[in-house]
Length: 294
Image (tube, rainbow, N blue to C red):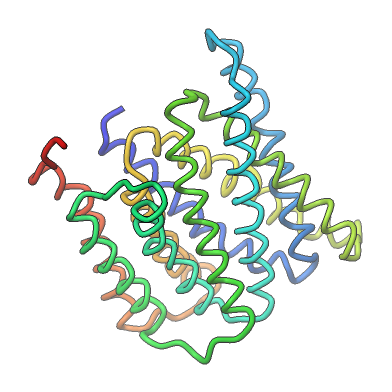
């Protein structure tokens, strides 16, 4: 798959996540965060199961134990990242959450460099800074004092960065993107249901009332978008993937204004433009200045 097409898949995933942010925030009016996490990922795993089974049937060799272990690590990072974000949203504001979640764009290249010793293309660094500044402007150019919800969301950004890096490390060698997605969804769903049923009140009527959000988050924002992420990351680098996926904040602001009537400040439009300029730099920059062979 050409790199520009892979990046388009990642951009599509960011757009879907942005739309799903509305469902993610309104669902907790009726049910707890862990129960919502469990239900959305169980739905996603059920939807993806036949496709993962078909992928396994077509594969010429079984998935190795090492790859399954990597898939499980990705599922753990996904669960902890989503849990920190959902719980953080019950304490902090949506603006702060969207801004702080976007910090994973900055964390990915640093973790890649410090842990994996893989320096990114030099043009990725200004693109990362532009993306970070764009998300900050999209949030209105200011943050209130950090509270416990903000700190949880920063932890969420770290887990997202780890998840993005782990996918980049395991998806290409395994050649099983759908199996990877199924494993991470199933594990996150089981963990979410386990915690939710243990510490939160289960009300069937509330679950039924939240069914539209659960189905949208499970089928579209999880099953489709995360699978697009996994497929796209087979053909691009983790730092570039983080930049394209970070457009979630831009699309969240757009759908928040369109569906919920939220107002986007003038500085937010400038921030959105800066994010797209960063995407163009990440997409076209390495093509204009190819990285020399080591």
